[in-house]
Length: 102
Picture (tube, rainbow, N blue to C red):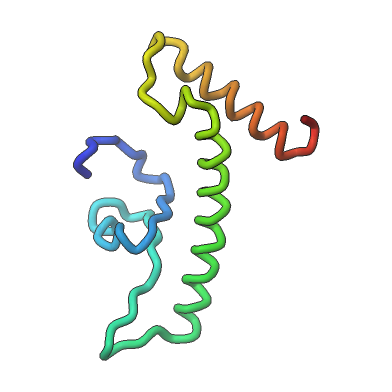
């Protein structure tokens, strides 16, 4: 919310427990269920949290692979026009290395 990033309303967001209130601002968001003393998690909610964590883990691994390239990790100091080209090239290199054709 504070960053001012505009997200298309149909885009699904997956967040961790820190994004509990995001659903009020973005209808297609998914966050883990939280347990309280009075209302512990049900077996179904625990299973949903595990599935969400599994999905988030894969996304975090992709982000880690992309951040190996310093141009994405640090402040971008090059031409803005070419930023999307560089991101696409880095994503292609990461996808190719995952596919086993390195």
